[in-house]
Image (cartoon, one colour):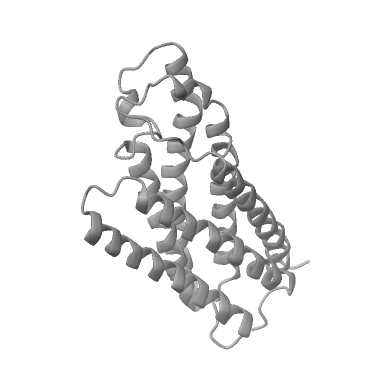
Length: 227
């Protein structure tokens, strides 16, 4: 099997896994929407929400690694004239995945233990229950970078093949929706946007990964491009 064929075979598996893990993460996240808790976010109800509110973080971390692998395959798949764009996409995705992996790992491993032991210095600024905290801000940053990855991948895909055209439009629409939603939320709420934009940008990114993962699985199943 040629290197390109091996990359497509691997890409097919990664794309299928990405769809499955994204669906699982989305489902767990929807069942774990945290209750509104007043500052300093250490009320009696918080311990009772462990571990349910944290389950989704673990597949989300796996998802970040899968998407890095998926973009790496797309870089291998890209024609030589588009390698600059695919390299940019891969670099941006590594940054996005790093931001989100660190954010999710701290939230899943450090925060519950700190609450259990009563070690609450800095808790309020890091906890996911703070709509103005670091967790929400890093999620916004990570998923905004992910939509930039989608945009960077647009020139990688052909305009002549129908399937690749569909993926191009999906990725372009994802980026446009992210920018438009940020503009609307900022216009309506200013800096006090709480977790409104975070929920929107996550939904955009995950829905794009589900739909895009299905389309990419079909693309990779067909094999490498013929020069």
